[in-house]
Image 1 (cartoon, rainbow over the protein chains, first blue to last red):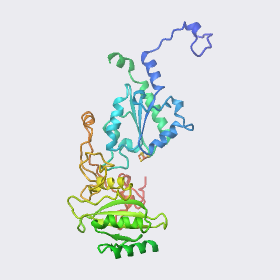
Image 2 (image 1 turned 60 degrees about the vertical axis):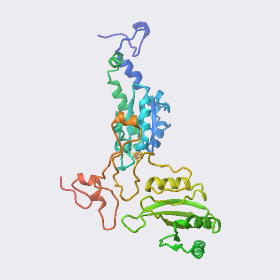
Image 3 (image 1 turned 180 degrees about the vertical axis):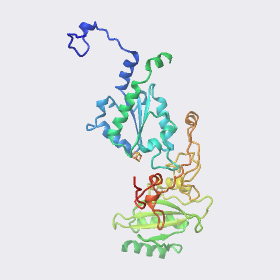
Image 4 (image 1 turned 45 degrees about the vertical axis):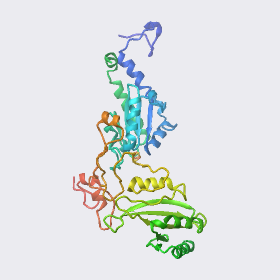
Length: 169
Length: 208
Ligand code: SF4
């Protein structure tokens, strides 16, 4: 059907100030575009994490520039660096203090598998203590790879059945 | 480096137990543990070795007895050279060495590290705790009887252990460690990727 309506966006005169959508779409849209990271910067990868936050790579383009050093205000923990056994308890405790819903990005070889540190002192992959959503390869990964991981995580969040989870919680 | 050699000669004249130590770079002396603090004080106050650059340990297993040696590197900020002082720990089972924290406050963390890695105690140290591993860790990782891969150990935080059911594991080297030794392994064969691929720089790539 041919219509004379050339508006591409919401038009309050036509649509009567009502938008119909799915709850999942709205919730996931909000969640995925304001993922505040908990910067768990533990070693050299943290430098690339900082680069991702700075002007050239500008993680703000994806709504994740608000690095929160309080776990209560964070949504996604970016484990950037070598997790030693001594630090692992602290990492797990900080994860436990983050409010639901929460996600984890394991950034770099160390956080994903222990990396080159097959040693008595280093946790062999942060997935031994945390549920990891996205792994980023590289030693260190470039900032673009971290941004790619963030976009992948946003896609994952957009597919979550958030509304039914919220109602059943 | 005449200053350091003068210092070594002076020390040998003053302490009968001080002997010269084979060294490829800086002048070095062996010192009995009982004379150690005197020698270090003389080097600092009379010969200008005012900076304690490093304290470390050696485990000689399966070599000569006594098993443990503590090594001190002193630097002179006026003549810009080093002298090395080594002292053996008399007791192999519970090695001890008098603390140098009375001479250099900076010896504090160095000695904590030697204690953490070798289990050598420093009587008189103000705060001898582990510095790298967690306090409850039962092993001394740089001792020769400690396997390179590590030993399975419980983590310190009981709540986290209960939640995650995980602990420190032994992490075998998967064909490593990838260090080049004299007459030893060829690095491109030893590298993990080389094991998965049928060709390396020494074995030509097969025709596709
Ligand atoms: S993956 Fe590489 S760059 Fe990242 S923390 Fe480990 S060693 Fe450093």
